[in-house]
Amino acid sequence: TTDDVFTFELYETDQTFTVSSTSKETTNVNTQTGKYEFTLSYTQQDVGKTFYYVVMEKNAGQTIDGVTYSSQKYNVTVTVEDNGKGGVKVTTAVNDGTTGIGALNFTNEYNAEKTATNFEGTKVLNGIRDLKENDFTFDLYEVTEKFEIDSAAIQSVENKADGSFVFENVEFTTAGTYHFIIKENSENPIGGVTYDTTQYHITVKVSDDGKGKLNIDETVILKVEDGKSDAVNTISFENSYNATPATVSLGGKKVLNGRELTAGEFKFLLYSANSNFEVAEGVTAILASNDANGSFVFDTLTLTEAKTYYFVIKEDTTVEAERITFDESVYNVSVEVKDDENGKLVASQPVI
Image (cartoon, rainbow, N blue to C red; front, side, top):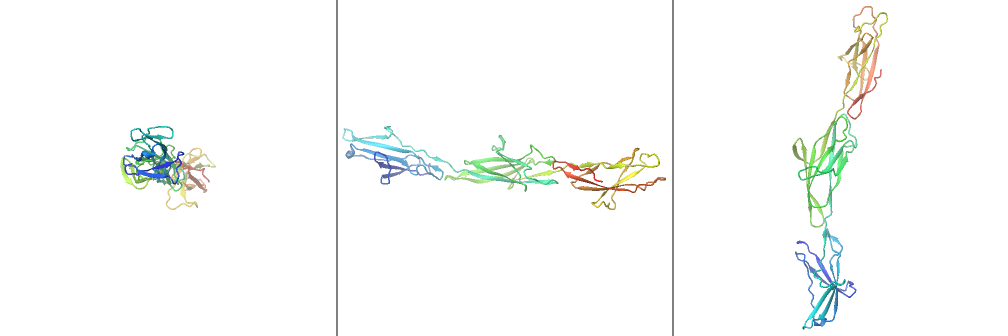
């Protein structure tokens, strides 16, 4: 209270203790110790009289600049008598009959209005998978000054479709220095995603202006990654997505009319083609040969992109064989590959 001034009012009233605008008002201001006093004098002419007073604090019941003023009201009765020794005797009492009252005390409360801030960040997802709303979760912890997490997260939020996320209305009710950690939550991981282990250590300094308001004076953000700490202005988590390739096996069956088929007797060619099933010049064929039953299978194809693949399969007619009429058929095969968005590429049934 050393820098504050509080005013106290003394009203002279009638026995009903009704304060009116015509009542006499006396004002006194407290000292730095918080003490105040009213000095009243009575003479022989006041003997036999009773005086009635009300003592209140100015602005009673109001809240101004964070101070809630006391609504306490003291009704005081002062009786003046002859002390029989050539002087006067003054008896002071409050209206509940208590006598010898020593102090009329008032207790005020000071509370600054709480303040709040937002912590905003961005999620970036690299790879063939598009970022979707609510894909990722981020946790905000209030921590010790050594940035130790000793309690549950105070907020958890998810990203929007554009990758942004925000912790809203992080409140401060008293002045001081506050410490927070923001990190990505990987408890329910999406398949194929490599999560960002970066932590952001945030320090917020809050001051009280002494007039009922808290102010955020400073916010410091440190990016902590791989044992290194760097001051930054923004919060961003970067993940990568990779799906495991799809695999597909293509093959067929050779039928030879006229004599018994021999294993390895015929060769078959598999070419990668464009969407019109045109084979570019210089494309190397994958080879396969028949077994004794006529079946042939090309080496397993590994498909690494989510798209439609096109292939051309035909018999190798350049093989030297006596009295063989080769099949000139050409088979166009398409395979659609989709990303299940949980870390896997999945190939459809080949279309021939």
